[in-house]
Amino acid sequence: MMGRRTEASVALRHSDTDDRPPGVANPLPSPMSATLTHASDCSATDLAAAGISVRFQGLAAISEVDLTVRRGEVLGLIGPNGAGKTTLVNCLTGHQRPSEGRILLGQMDITGWSPQKFRRAGVARTFQSGRLFKDMTVLENVETTAVGLGRSRRAAAREAMDALDWLGVADSAERLAGVLPYTDERRVAIARALVVPPEYLLLDEPAAGMSDSECDELLGFVNEIPGRYGCGVLLIEHNMRVVMNSCSRIVVLDGGRRIAEGTPEAVQKEPGVISAYLGEG
Ligand SMILES: Nc1ncnc2c1ncn2[C@@H]1O[C@H](COP(=O)(O)OP(=O)(O)OP(=O)(O)O)[C@@H](O)[C@H]1O
Image (cartoon, rainbow, N blue to C red):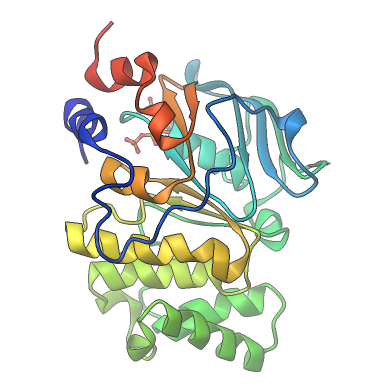
């Protein structure tokens, strides 16, 4: 995982359009400037955190954070290690109950729902660790999710193969998930999250530990998800080159607080962001 200074140096050097790598699609048109968004501004279908705080035995992991994910966008969530990114995603997917604040799906308050209920409502995620069932085949891993979401076995098998095929891992369908190479494991985890198409997909460092080319290839798929599946994507990613190329909008956390939000160009010029990454006061 990259440290503060390394991430910053990449972020601050980067120009958002000029050196886009092969395989990484053009970013979506930017829907907003660097203005802040609050849950009360969100549309009927947005997924939003409204004033979310989480405390662990007195430690404030995140404090009064607002964030809105919209259908059709790739929203980047960045911040130094320990900034609260995973905790926020856990709240947005039902894996962590906030100490304060609300999670909204459109106008519906879904705070406190179970992760299964979030998924049935259309909010899917992947984890930093793949969390595949290692003694099941790749196909069974994806198929089981679809059956759990109400698909017949036949429809589940078909949709699972479609998702695996699109992500380039259909050849591994009958292999045990436990023997997959790391990059394929990540792709299968995304296939599982997409199998009954969600309205929102939250990806927690999907390319962590990959080489630059593996990372670009995977993020090429991520960029296509909104167009192909019609959903909104929230992407936690430490590789700033990838974030700046992939995301139409970025939210920055530091010390559990949201310190900036806006387009990649706007965010990387924010003094608070530069300071957070450089550790300057
Ligand atoms: N279950 C927990 N119990 C106690 N403290 C926790 C727990 N989960 C997270 N924390 C703390 O909350 C803070 C935010 O952690 P979190 O994992 O959300 O940050 P992050 O931005 O995702 O970090 P990283 O980039 O390293 O994955 C950290 O100080 C972390 O140690």
